[in-house]
Amino acid sequence: MQSAFISYSRDDNYFLTLLVGILDYYRVPYWHDNGGISLGAKYEEQIEQGLSNADSLLAILSENALRSTWMAREIASFRKEKPEGMIVPLLLQPVRPDELFKGLSDYQAVDFTNDMWAGFEQLLAFFGEPFLAPLEHRTGEDRRTGERRLREDRRRAPISDRLYQGMWKSYTISTGQGEAEPFGQPIGSIRQVAKLATVLSEPGSELARYEFRNRATGKVEEMTFERVHDLTYLARQDMEGPYTLKHAWVVERLAEILVERYEVRPLERRENERRSDRDRRQHRFE
Image (cartoon, rainbow, N blue to C red):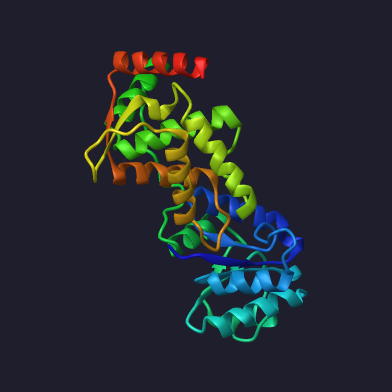
């Protein structure tokens, strides 16, 4: 999937907030200067790095944008750095793109001036995602039937999905962390990796519900803090890029790594309860 650099005027922050919320929801990688600059870093150097790492540039165009010298500089830098890179003007008001940067009108724009819904449909199609695809309509379903279907769907789901859903639920309950919240800058991420590993390696955690047989050695391995920590750090490294890293993405990648490295088998309920009780007793006397 393409990663995007977002160029905008600070007077259009209201639309930036909406745009990044939707990109987060569809997990489209992006970078903008309001959330991607590290503490203590040089402003212009970070912007140049963001431009260099991006595959495309989204330019939010309005009357405010026409007065922005920064936007013109960002577009010029992107054109120089990525001559074949795609530029997508996002029209919030009926302005002429060439008034901001000569040649900008040559690029196909997404028109948000009359219909926001149609605009986001067109933009998400650029990233290969359907915007708010319709869900199947079901009638006559009471709450208990719905809850039963959710349990059955979870049992039938691929094991990586079941791991992700269970690990994410455990993590959010324990930490109160939201799905779209950033995983942290490099220094903070080390702390976040340890926090996630601590939650997932506790007795009775989601990982305690499964048996993990190493595909290389054929041996069953316990998901200790050290092992979960190493795998979580690997997941974080895999997800690094020119975008704001989210907690849920790291947890999802961790689930994929577990399935790649292990044959994962759900434990029977009674077997899992016995193991949890044994782990709690050992933990109490340590």
